Image (cartoon, rainbow, N blue to C red; front, top):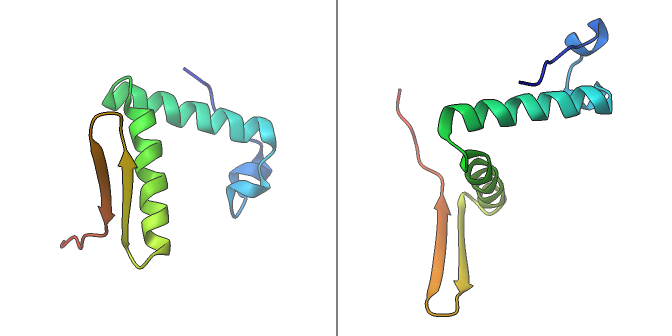
Length: 86
């Protein structure tokens, strides 16, 4: 497991952009390993793809539809924002 060691400056930084490259690499590795451990081997791939699609949907008023032409069948991937209560 990756060990996340931060300097005092990094611990108190307002955002991750103030961290040095090595610290950013360690946090990305630690998060990736945590996701994989909790959700399985393909979880990082799925989580990354879902985050990318959600980000693009957010830019387009909360909805995104992508048509993908396959060798045998076409696919449409639809992403839309839902409202959660609670």
